Image (cartoon, rainbow over all chains, first blue to last red):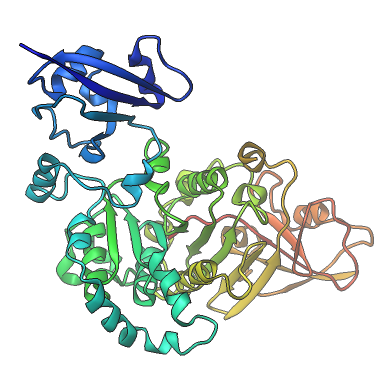
Length: 382
Length: 79
């Protein structure tokens, strides 16, 4: 039997499987295997368990991703180029741009589109750009009339991506306004299902959606509002293990979470990546909203260096202390406005400022904030 | 000297009758700091919070002046 040579690239921690030829953050080696060997055979020869790898590309086509390893039986050919990324690697650039797929993973994704982290392939492949362009001219007509935005601004919105962490009260409102405004790609992270008691404030969901996943309910609502928006759904909690991978593909992160721990996590991720964190939080009749952009001003930890000890108590306030229906609407709308302004580079952002809103007294208090020179997050992000 | 204080969110629980964002009028001795004000209002030192004076965040050593409009808010968790 003839042998074949494979051009193998190992990124991040996977470079250790190169057997000592690793240099820096990756390794490139030629592996010789019997002709007809499969990708599983290649993994065996490297001594790498299939669960160790994340995104995998064969000749530039995505063949596997975390949770979907449809390529194990794929027969490799002489001179094939195979690239393995570690589970914790930053998402490869070509994936962020919308990777071409191997037949196997394409089939797997279409069989069960909920397997993957991202769900925008189908929508992307069906886009008819010329038709959209005409539709969009009409859809965004009132925006296009604003000289501060105009056609180039609308294009910037379409090219932008925003990750919304939480599809509750805040996320419902910010996601709908961002979709209506034409933000091109919106990611939504939430582990929960819709409950009846959510509906007095979480307006992205409907009575019919009770019992379904919030990310799916929100995606359906957005699709009905503006089918030109690509929606990525992440039915999971945003946690230290997945937050970097999930968020690395987005320009701006918007807060819709219901607990402080996740807010510290969003902040730290944003400081590290140099991305703006559009903050919003609500409590009974009150709300807080601001922009934390550590490149220009303070971050969340500059204000609140350490989480309160009673974080568990502060979490899930809506359940314990009630929530006035419209408060998340007001704060989420301001968040959406800040996101759009950041994308367009217009107006004055809330970076370096916090707005405290009290709906009962209907007061807005602006507080000017400064960077904390001792902030650990800012220091680590430098 | 006389100052006003606005408290927000969970910090209202330390001040009977306080409503978020509604100014309370207080008498303090000249030279009092924000920390003195917190102590007078019974807001514990370990409570995580941001204090501000006349619309600008200040640390707790900030010395207050007659007529100052002070405020204090904690992080809130809801979404």
